[in-house]
Image (cartoon, rainbow, N blue to C red; front, side, top):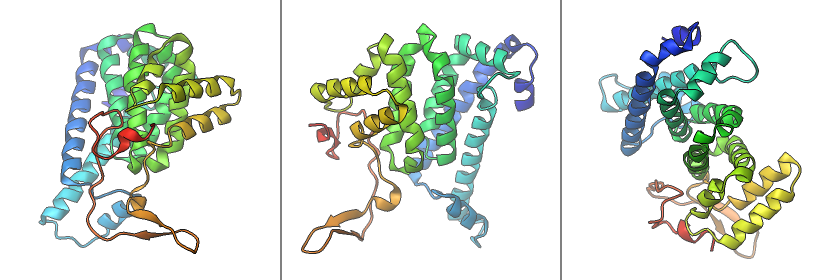
Length: 285
């Protein structure tokens, strides 16, 4: 299927099945990732994946089946990204006509953009990084289409904030911050939607948000702009799994960190949710 899509001489032919394919893949992956998170993620790093492949687990055990199914899900997720990346690669290519068609034909565009949001937030670092980089590349093409600006300023920006809030994606945070910065800088001059999305970020203080906009508008270098965004959002930026238990111990000596014993379930509440028992609601007070 992938070679057929990438080498199709007439993109309009794809309208007969590509919307259904994207819809099916998006719904299937979303459901299976939700189920996986409910049951617990086993593979968080490449080292854990390698350890599983070399393990001596009984292939008939429930644990083996769970880990095997998770690995298959990760492989399928990355294969889906493999399909999209060549189409929206950087620079001119033979896929330019296909790219334009997929961004202009709404039955395809709708599920393409939904897929990008879900791929960015699924708990697979490889897929998250590659999808976020893809979004950075196609962002100018999305913003120049007036019909897509609301989606970019709401859903796409919200998904990027969601991924930034998830400590699982700590390694992806630099590229996620780049995407958030680009969305805000490129879309804000022609739309209030990014401002409104940030304003709805829990109990966002309007004074701080207005100061953020002033600081951002006065920064001329991209590196400085990214640092401004990073600092502004540091209150919702998640920490890695290895840091969930760490606390500062104060005393006469310098602060150190230790690990607390016990079971811990990482909060799954979304960064834009208002009902917040974790205390995140007060971050911007």
